[in-house]
Structure formats: C-alpha cells, structure tokens
Image (cartoon, rainbow, N blue to C red; front, side):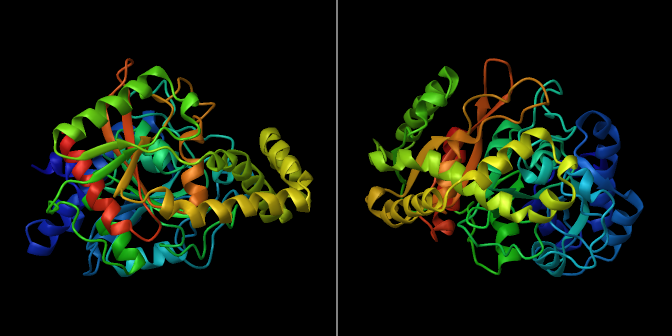
Length: 423
C-alpha cells in the first residue's frame, strides 16, 4: 500500500490523516520516493531537502491541510528555503520570512515539501522542467514545476501564480486541475510581484475538491465541497473568445465535443460570444503586464540588467516605452470590460472555453501561448481547468470553466460537474 500513497488526492489523504489511519510521515515518504524515481527526468524542483521535508511532516500540526505535502512556486518567499525567482540575480537568496500564502498554508497544517521551478520572474525564460507525460515537451509556465510535479505524483497540492496563463495553461498541459481564483482571493504579500493589476496566486491539484480545500484553507474562505452534486445541471455558455483563431483544430474539436457531452448530461448549452470590445483586452493586457513588470523590476533593471535574459530585457524596454496615454487607455479597457462582464454572462452559470491553444508544444525553450487565458486574468474572474482527454500526440488536454468575479464557490462546483460529465 505504501508505494501507492503518492496517488492519493489531498482530500482523501487528509481524511485518512485526521482519522488516524495515515501518518503524515508515511505520505511524505511515499512522495519523496516518487520524486527520487522521476525527478531526474521531470526536474520540477528549484529546491528540495528531503530530510527537512520529513522533519516537517513529523511536526505537522492539525488543521484543514493536516500533514499534506505542498509545493511552493519559487516566486513565493519561504523563511526556511531559498527564493530565487527563476533568475541568477537572486541565486541562493534566503528571505527572513514566509510569504502570506506559505504562512497560512503552514498555519493550516500543510507541509512545504520544496520550491518548484518557475520561469524567469514568472514571465520569460523557462527552467529545465519537462512535461511528465512526455519529457520532450514543455510542462507550460510559468508554474512549470508545480504543474509537472502534481502531474508526476510528487505532491498532491502546489501553489502557482498567474499573470497571463501561468496556472491554467500548465495544469492543462500536465493533465491536472488548475484553479485561478478571483483576483485577490489569496493574499500576495511576500510574492515577487511583477504586474500588480494582474498577478494572482492560484493552486494546482489532482481534483477540483482538492483545489477548493487548499485555496479555502489559505484564504480563510468556505469554497464548498465541489464533490457534492448540485440540485440542477448548469447553464453553460460555449465561448469562442476573441482569441479563438489562435487555437488549433484539436482544440476546436475538443470544445465542440465537450459541449455535446455536457448537453447529453443535462446541461443547458448555448453559444455565448463576448461583445466586440473584449478583443481590445489582448493588446491592453500586454501593455499593462509589461509596463507594470518593468516598474516592478526597477532594481534589477538598474543594478543587474546584464543578468536579465535578452527576451525579458526586450519586453521590459517595451513596457517602459509605453506612454502614459497608452497605459491609461489599457486600464480603461480593463475597467470597462470588468464592469460589463456580469451583463455579458447574464443567464449563465459559467462559460466553457479552451484552456490552451492545443497540446503542450515540443521542446523546453517555450512554455506555450497564454492567449486563451490572458483576457480572463485581465477580467479578474475565477477560472478552473479540468482534464479533458488527450490530443493526437497522446498529450493531455484541458477545458476551462470561467465564472463571474466573486462566484468562486459556484464556479468550482460547476467545474466538478463538468469534470464528472467528461468522465
């Protein structure tokens, strides 16, 4: 039995721990054995100390996450592990305090198993992590190590962050569940912030219920039990967003196939296009993300510019070149579309939309295009991706469920309904 403990969902594992039939040390030991087996290929970790992880598991206190191993994306500060932000500028940097997400995770009884690989400042140059389904392909980014680690069975829960598509896309590529909450749901204090108007702390796990458990525990919110079947079927709007042409034929077919499946399962399924103005979010997102990131990296740009990758330097120069008028216009697009989104989704419970343009691209030099995610991040709305089979190359596909800001509990419940209908 011990060798299979790493397969447990977080909800199943914590129930057994709290019932006294599973020790946190046994779960951690099984996860570390799995890591020893596959980490040389997957390379999900930026920092891992197995002995320290075992000591922490033995000392785990009670709480909603009692004894659960949790991976921490390496843009969230940790008092007992280096925080290097995917950049040589910060190599071996040791913060004195935990970030708020880590502090509240530990307060709920969770155990930090290690730090996971992120792209450079969670935005550009990828690390060495590979896709657990096929090591020749990217796991996505910027939450590369977190998504790959959950997919490989290294840990049941992981933190990710999203500025464009950095939780949803890698979770879809790695065949796991990703949840980007409504903006601000999980406190960001102690995170290496890039774009203050966009950066969102999210979670990656094996099930929707795991995401609700984890995010609810650290945010101090009741996100419900998504495994509890709703009394009715959802009203789903199939949304071919303004970026539909960027999706490949596999994804076009996937969305139609899933829509048909949901209709057969009892959902009311209709097409729902966003108004034309939402197309302006694509350009507005790029202006806001890069201009805010350039300001956030002020010290690095001044003191260590030569240690930034060329592509990141180029994007930061683009951000700094934006005029005040251009920035104000982009923020105005954000404000108008955010305010109008409830009306654009009136009569629906959720939207169904692609999680990524297709399967994970081949190679590790590019983490894939966030084009299917950035508009939702700009809107500050909750998004969940659930596994939706495999593509022509045998790599995982995901489907994205999107709701209105603040309706996270309902969105998680409907995401689980979708996952169950897909089977």
